[in-house]
Amino acid sequence: MSPYPLHTLLELRERAEEEAELALAQALRVLTEAEARRCALEAELARRRDGREAQVLAHLAQVLASGAEARALALMGTHVERLKDAESALEGTLRQQEGAVTAAQEALAQARARLAEAARELKVLQKHREAWAQARRAAREGREEQAQEEVASALFLSRQRK
Image 1 (cartoon, rainbow, N blue to C red):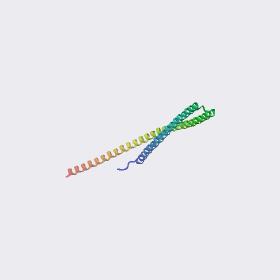
Image 2 (cartoon, rainbow, N blue to C red):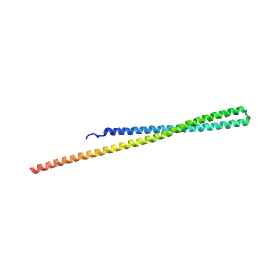
Image 3 (tube, helix red, strand yellow):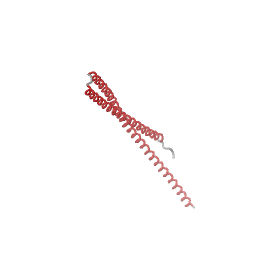
Image 4 (cartoon, rainbow, N blue to C red):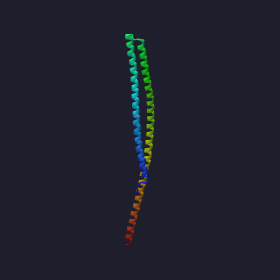
């Protein structure tokens, strides 16, 4: 039996599907890492806000208990402002990470679509190969049956002549 005429194309489709599967796995890994980073940033932001609030409450309790100077209150205000600035910077980083998560989600959706397309193309070619093989088998069986009939006819005719 001769080889499938579209064998090279079939191999290309199989490789394309494998590459699409790898791309999907990579996109999923990137999304997972981006979401983990976002969660870590959210937790860090919450920790810093809670820490700032705790520091302010502790300082106010100290001021009320000991009657601190105005200079100490001003320094605490400056410190609180620096903490708020750091939180704002972290919020900016968090927004960037949320953008990265969105981009990773879009990349994952595209990778899934490419995998679905590659799988569909491969399936079409595999069905074609099966139909081709079935047609070849049917043609071979027809030729064999015809050859058997010719042999049977020849035997019959040779017996009739005797």
